[in-house]
Length: 327
Image 1 (cartoon, rainbow, N blue to C red):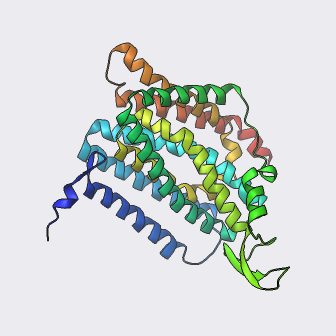
Image 2 (cartoon, rainbow, N blue to C red; image 1 turned 60 degrees about the horizontal axis):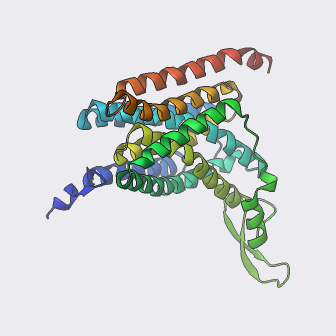
Image 3 (cartoon, helix red, strand yellow; image 1 turned 30 degrees about the horizontal axis):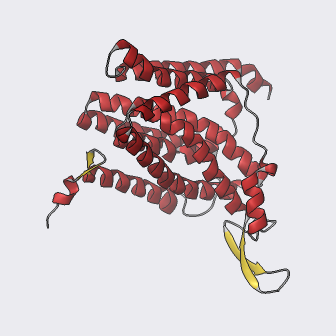
C-alpha cells in the first residue's frame, strides 16, 4: 500500500501530523464519553480537578513533542498559545455557568451538554482558524488588523466594566422560541422529544431547554473565539500550532468547568491581567517592525505572558482570601 499521501503538505505540515492529532482528539473524546462518563452522573470537584490535571498534562506533553519535533520556537509558541487560550476559557466558564443557571440545567446533565458543545467548538475553530490562516497568508496586513484589535480589546477590558449577559432578552433565544417547538421542562438528557401538538394532537418534534443551552454555549464560544483566534495568530501564524494549542486548551474546559464554576469569584482580578496580556501580544507585532526584527523572540513572549497571568492568579487568590473565609 502506498502511504505517500500521508506526506502531502497541508497548511504547512505533512498530512500525517494533522491526522495523528485528530486521531488523538477522537481517542480522548471517546475515552471521556465512552468510559469515564458512559452514564449520566454528577461530576464532583475532586474528579474535576483530576481530569483537568490530566488534560493539562496531555496538552503540555503534546507541546513537548512539538518542541522536540518542530523546534524550540514552535514549542514555545505552542505553550504561549495554550496558556493564553486556557486563561481566556475562564471567562467562558462564567458565561456557561450563567446559561446553565438560566435554563436550570441539572448538574447531572451538564457534562453531556459540554461534551457536544466541545464537538461543535472543534469544528467551528477549525473553520475560523482555516479562514484566518488563508487571510494572513494572502494579505499580510491582516495580521496587523488582528494585532490592533487585540490592543483595543485589552484596553476596553481594562477601563470598561463588563455587564452580565441578559439571557432573557437574548435575540437568538427569542428567535428559537418563536420558530421552534420548545418544551417548558427538561426531559432527562434529551435534546429533542416527540410530544402531542396542542393544536392538532399529532406528535411533533420539540426541542428541550437542554438544546437551547447547547446553542447558546456554542454562540458564546464563537464570541470568545473573536478574541482568542486573533490572539494566537499574533503569537504564531503556523496553522498547526494555532489549531492544536487551541483545541488542547479547550478539551479540558469541560473538566475545568466543574471545578471553577463554584469558585470563579476567586479569580476576580485575573481579567485585568488577561487584558494586559492581549495588549502585550498585539503590541509586540508592531514592536517587531519598529525594532527592525522579524518577530519578538518566542522565549520573551512566553515569559512575559506567563508572568502576567501568574501575577493575576496570585493577586486574585490573595485579595479574595478574606471573602472566601467569610463564606
